[in-house]
Length: 210
Image (cartoon, rainbow, N blue to C red):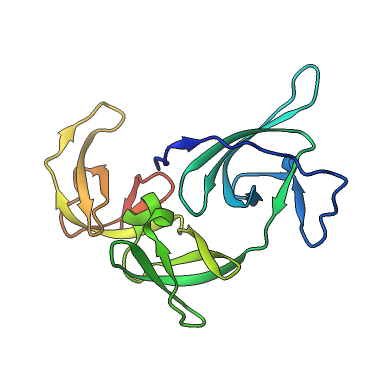
C-alpha cells in the first residue's frame, strides 16, 4: 500500500569482537524482526521486512529491508548470521494530531501537553490518514520524535464521490471516493458524499460504513 522512497545501499563493517562495547547495547541480527529499530553506522533504521535464509552449506544469511527513520529512504542489506548491530532505547508517547504547516506535522502529548513537530519526510505516506484529533503513537529517540504508529483503522468523512462502475463478479459495483484528508478509497456503490467510512491504515482499503 505504501510506496517507499528510493532504495540505497550501505556498506556494513561488523563490530570488532575484541573492542569493548562499554555503554553500547548490541543486538544479534538473528533477533531482528519486523518493526524492530536498530542503529547501523550512526543511522537509525526500522525493519520493514526480514528473511532468514539457511543454505545447504555455510552460514545462514539474514536479508533485511529497513527504513531510515530520519530521511525515509530504504536500505536493503544482507547480513551473515552472527553479525551484530547496535540496539537503541526508545520512548513512546500517545499524542493527538493537531495540524500541518506543510513542512512539519504538529501533535500534542495527551499527558504532558507538549507539542512535538515531525518533518513531512518522516510522516511520508501516512499523511492522508491524519485528521485533526486523531490519536497516534510517536516514537522518540534521545528526545527526538523519529517515527509514528497509526491506529489499525480510521473513520473519515466522504467529501467527493464519482459515479459507480461495474466491476467483476467478485467486487460488484464500486466507485472511488475522496475523504476529508484527500485520501482516495475504492468503496461500494451505495457510499455517498457525507457518509463516514472506516479505512484500514495498513492497506488503505475500505472496511465499512460507520
